[in-house]
Amino acid sequence: APLWKALKKGDQFDLQLIHTGQHFDRNMSEVFFDQLGLPKPDAYLDVHTDNAPSQIAQIILALNAEFSKIRPDLVVVFGDVNSTLAASIAANKLGLPLAHVEAGLRSFDRSMPEEHNRIVTDMLADFLFTPSPDADENLLNEGVAKERIFRVGNIMADSLLAFRPEVEKLETPKQFGLKNQGYGLVTLHRPSNVDDGVVLTEILAALGEISAELPLLFPMHPRTRKKIEELGFDSNKGKAQIQFTEPLGYMDFLNLTMNARVVFTDSGGIQEETTLLQVACLTLRENTERPVTISQGTNRLVGSSRQGIVEGFHSVLNEEKSAVKPPELWDGKAGERIAIVLNKNMSE
Image (cartoon, rainbow, N blue to C red; front, side):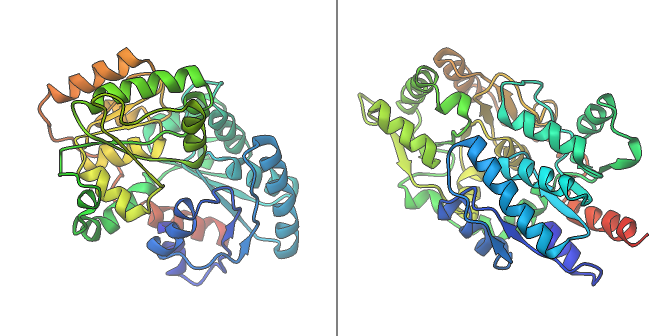
């Protein structure tokens, strides 16, 4: 959304917005268009499948047809989801220039599907827009030419900072009977945490133990809900206080994040948002592609074991909150910097 708005300020580009349909839950897709002020997509590919190879293949085929029809001068992709990889391959096979926003991030964990998506996309991209110094270093170490790398800052911060005044007026915790700073917020969606029943059971056991001390609110990704239902998990067993809910819109979720005592997640974006909001974040993974959120933020890795998660939680409770300076260039102007680079280079 910030890049769309920045490019719209000029008249150099005729913008086309393509929605693959990868996230088919309304609160994970359409509601974001409404809340972030994006126009209705020019094309909706309607790709609905949870099977990753099939999903990527369908998106490549659909985008090949779309790109062949409109012949864009540039394709811009974001992040590390399957749509990012598929669009990069489709653009590359048609000889179309490619820009990757959030380039250079690495977890160095090849078991993560997102890591494959990031690496392949960066190798195909002509413009690599990075959020932090470690991303620049990763790309240079992989042999990417320096002139293709542009550090512009974190585009997620653009949206957060732009909407923060409006979001702060909301009282979303009250809708769930919760008090500010009196609850924890949970999100889970990574296959390594959700698809393995043993790992998911361990995480749920930790959350159940923690919720006896601090109520938890858990907006559930559709794949996560399906797996939890298969396990027959009882969120009210004993003294547990876990409140499950459907996925939430951007505004409500951001308000819940900024008012939480602690956030439990395996999401990269939420690691960044909590750093900007100075909210304690426990990442339920052994690694992260966003190390700046640990070195300069409020994030810490606790893994997926019951013991690690519970110990991390108690560490947060026993620590005083301290002010954290935002990482460099996380200032709400990343979209503008990207637009400047594209306007200059695409006109040459």
